[in-house]
Image (cartoon, rainbow, N blue to C red; front, side):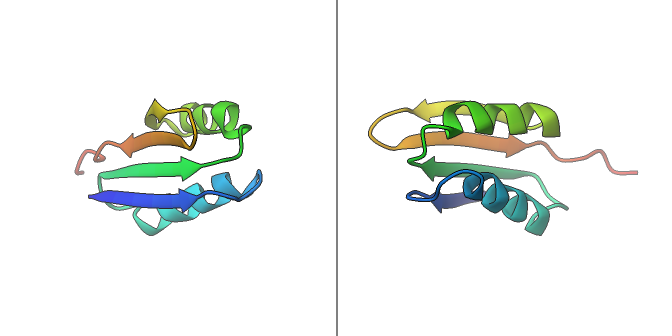
Length: 78
């Protein structure tokens, strides 16, 4: 599932809060998020959050709008 998460014009920490909420709402499945933001602090904050949460990420675009592709692989079924 691909989700577009628009956090443009939001200052830190709101992009992280929106990302957490999106992940929580889709916690039971594999998910890909295309996150757009304009706060330059996100260039450090998003990778740090992803590493902390065990998420994979890729910086897709840095200017004029910052875009990250973030994904979580499916959890093994027990």
